[in-house]
Length: 536
Image (cartoon, rainbow, N blue to C red):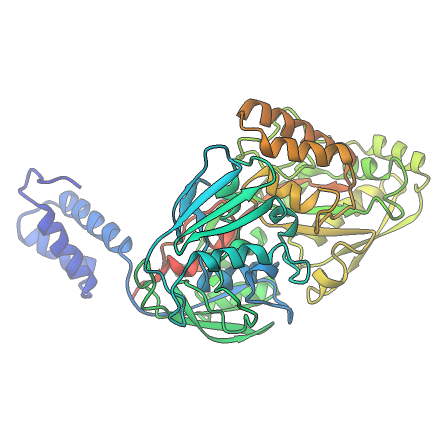
């Protein structure tokens, strides 16, 4: 914004127009005044445009925000260590904080921590910001951090990041606001690791998580697992009170129903909608989409310890039969990009761009299926709307298979219970992996021999050793070389076919403001409630 225009218009005048818009003056009324004062339509339009943009970027306090995700379960939890669904992440982000968080560029920023320092990337000293309190009034101290971190190492807790936390071998509360964490070996990624949703800080000694007692921007009002949650603004939030009065979150598993709820005005945001449903929004000026590309993917998992995945040639044959270009173009309507059967997306600095995606080659696939002795057999493939695009991807595979004498029987199952009954268990099924910020986190969660979410039961001592070696390697070039080789190993040896990275599309009311992309996933990395506001 300029200090002074040729027509002597000043910033104070800009603010006067902005205030008039805020108080309900129409654009036509203001333009009429401009013209009456001798201003040209072009100059008046420019001033009005600036004032409108400034008004749109100014958070408005108040309002009850209602949003719908796509999955929920009676196992929904407010324990950040156990969170596994996006709905869990959204709720936990509204109640708790992490020591760090990732900004829009994927860089770690300080949240509860005032500083994080280490001379050798092995012993880390973390100083906490003073004056932060939990919802029940208790002051945040280093003992809370030590307790929160140690929980992940307790097998009885069932933390989803147990395998990642195992590298943390020592915890010490140096003083009330200083914590020392010692790692088994150097890892420069610790500030990024601490930004993961599971590492949110809870009060020392917490065993009952139904109250959601955190330091976060909202306090819990109601929580009914598998149904909904309602939270209200925390007036004592250490960053300052957030704009929204309250936030209600629930799931509408059916994609069309979720969009219709938005169109009817029942909700302000429908998370993760299919590109095919964007046409329902066409012509409706009250809604718009928010697209983010952050490494989300749906993969086809073939367990290496079960038939047919244990037969040499079968998995490679499937990878040859997946028409990746068609999946991106037809299934995702162009909202995605071809992937190369490993989980590091192209926007990540450690992505192996030299590893090319498997070409669509039905004849090679046929030869491989013959080698595996499965050509002509009927192979069950479990798919569900719970795993985005999985039914459509299975259909693409089925149609390609029918042309070479390979039969894939799509067993479509309900979204309710899919993640507990079929994911990780069925011989051939689909996963849906949310973005993770570093290769080490993805590998530790999904491909380490002891990984809790090892979807194809991939076991490799060599891979495990390389993962630990890369974790402690502080030279970027050497670390990337290790990660490049590990991506090749996953693409060639694991039973996970990753045909495409999916662009996440959240559909929202145009009254919802402040929503931005985040590398941790849609809905601003699931932390949207803290940052958005409702236009009055």
